Image (cartoon, rainbow, N blue to C red):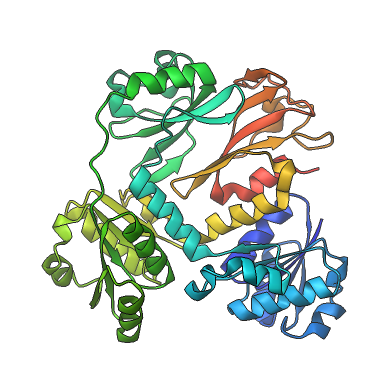
Amino acid sequence: MKIAIAGAGKLGMSLAEALLGGGHKITLIDSDEELLRQAGDRLDLYTAAANVKERGALKDLRVDGCDIFISCVESDELNMIACRFAKDLGCPAAIARVRAPEHVDQMHDLMRCFGIDHIVNPDLACAEEISKYLTQKYSLKGGGFIVEGAAVQEVSADAVPQIRGMEIRNAAKLLDGLLIGAISRDGKISIPSGCTIIEEGDLLYVIGLRGKVAALAEKLSSQEGRPQLRRAMIAGGGKTGYFLARLLLDKGIAVKIIERDKERCAYLSQNLEKAMVLCGDATDMALLQDENLDGMDAFIAATGYDEENLLVSLSAKKRGVRDVVTRISRRNYDSITDALGVSMIVNPVDICTADVLRYIKGGSGGEFFRIIQGQAAFSDIQVKKGMRIAEASLSELEIPKGVLIAAVCRGRDVLIPNGRTVIEPGDRVITLSMLSSASALESLFSL
């Protein structure tokens, strides 16, 4: 497909990299020529310096010859206008990034008025994933049925103590042959190897035949669940903090927000009547302690600065807060977050990239898609003739790091694959992939 992306920021670059992995032809548009130069040095794409608020500029760039137009420049209004121009010029589909809270409740009206086919909101998506994690703990009660015959289940290693300290390849025997597809450890999701040692406190995502998964779920269902979430403190009252507070308040959870900007505090107080809004610096540990940080069930670092989020998360963790969630928008902090030991690390750029890719795949992308802990996703993908993955054994394909072929659905049969398994056109393949490995996944299923 030919895809035009307006905006060479973090989201635009993430989308361009992922879509190039799938073999799409990308045109990257931005008014900042230096950003475009940097993008051209990194990626094999066409760059164009233009202002997307000018209809004539989009016409000159022949967006009518593109299959999809994606606008993710800084301004919501400009994104919507650019999509309207692109649709008027003949582009079949338009996607816009829209972030302002006032637009959320009128999303469908905006889509209709501006001809937008899909809207992504990084802050809302991030807040939804955090809320889901805190309130549901990603528990797939009774098994999450992906497709007929296959399922996935979250299992605490502490609930099956005999597998702690074992290598995954040996632990599978005690789980009735179920595949351990992913491990959540200290807030980080990873796709393990057979030699990975299962540790105390690990959360395991197991995949297998529906009957076996259901039997395991029933066996573990009588065990006591985690304590209930009652009190949460949010550092940062920006868009993510606002959306998250609204979601948590709707569930009856007491919320405190720490925000340093006085005008923003006034906005939050007016629009979140049940929340306690405190004007102050979230990095001030004396303030956090005065506001009963130690008594919180959850602490969420959602300021606009990654460095601040890392600092306050570490402080909250040291104070013994049970669930600490950190919002990070850049990947160059991976080495730090690995050692942070928080409950969850969430990247809004990765979440939105996955959302857009899922939309672009449409019906051909399968019916099941579930993000886990904001870092990885299960999905099922219909294999077509000519795809790179088709008619080759998995060992020949050299599956990229960060991607797992978890199961293969062939007719009524469900196969847990090994290196000798050959993927055939018509198969539905269950994948587990890191959101940061979107480009690798796209490449594997490219035509």
